[in-house]
Length: 182
Ligand code: SF4
Image (cartoon, rainbow, N blue to C red; front, side, top):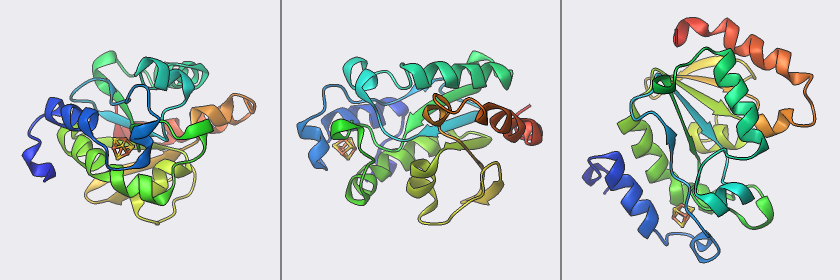
C-alpha cells in the first residue's frame, strides 16, 4: 500500500527493494530523485539511461546538461525544482519502457508526486505523458489540469541534443507559462 510510505525515504527504500518487473534483473543502480524535497516545479523524465544506471543519479549525462540550461533559463533556484523518472530501472539498450514496466512502477511515481507536492508538473516528452496521463494526449507547450495539478508538456532534453533549433520553442513553452512557477 503506497499510503504506508509516509516519506520520500520510505518510497526510496521500497524502490531499492522492488522486483516488480524484469528490469530489476538487469539494473545496476536504481535512479530515484534529484533536487528539492519540496519543489515548485517537478520535471518527469522517461527512464534512466546508461550514465544514470552507472551512477544512480537522474539526468547526469548530455541530456542532463540541457535540462540544467533549461532550469537556468526558467530562473529556478536549487530549492525550486526536482526531477524524477517514470520508471526507476534502465531498460536494456535504452529502449522505451513498455506498458507493463510503466504500470509496475506507477505506484512509486504517484507517491513521489504526492509527497513532493509541486505547483507545476513538467512532463519531459511522450513517455512521461503516457505514464502520467493514462493515455490522454497533450499538445507540446500546453498546460492542463490533471488530478488537481497543473501539467505542462515540453520536449525531452535528449530531443534537443541533435535538434537545437527546438530550443526556442522550448523557451517559449516556459515563457508562456512562467506565471505558474514564478
Ligand atoms: S522499474 Fe520500477 S517496478 Fe520495475 S523493478 Fe525497477 S523499481 Fe521495480
